Length: 98
Image (tube, rainbow, N blue to C red; front, side):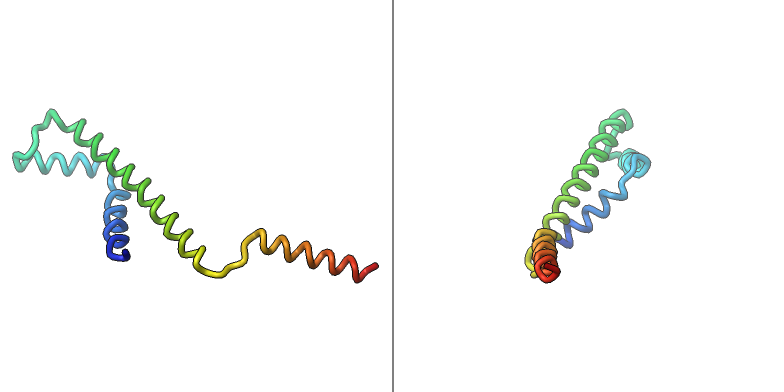
């Protein structure tokens, strides 16, 4: 599981640093190597940026889910737990004052 998370994290980091300029530079390198034709640049850049945005979004969801799972496995008091304790304490203090 952690190996997959590591790979997704690294891929996400790469995607998070993707900019239009970087995508254009990658495409220009492909053109120089003869692996792409210049007239396809705008479509390539658009596709790369869309993929980067989806990867960022997927990474955010994955991290959020993993954090929620980690927190759920730790016996921590919730806001509702604290609210119940406060209410009990208020009741006890009110009954002592009477």
